[in-house]
Length: 72
Image (tube, rainbow, N blue to C red; front, side, top):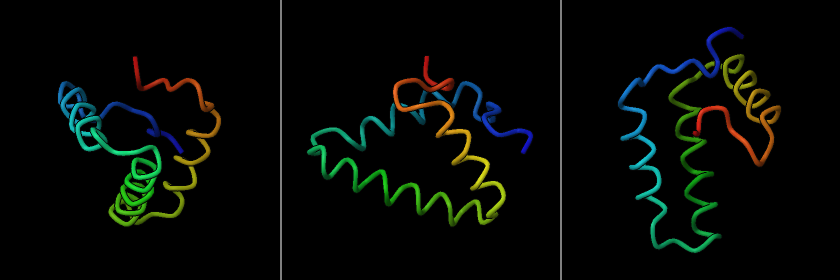
């Protein structure tokens, strides 16, 4: 699917990243994983398009666990 990974946040992306890191602050690894799982499910429901979600999962998996093209 085209557009997956396209920067749509612009400069606000840094603020979103900072807010995500702040949400994890002070959490155990287990609680952090739970937060991520809840966040993923909430975002998936917000997207609401199975094709887009499948494309995002594929793109995330292809990027691998130790690198992400969206994080500098």
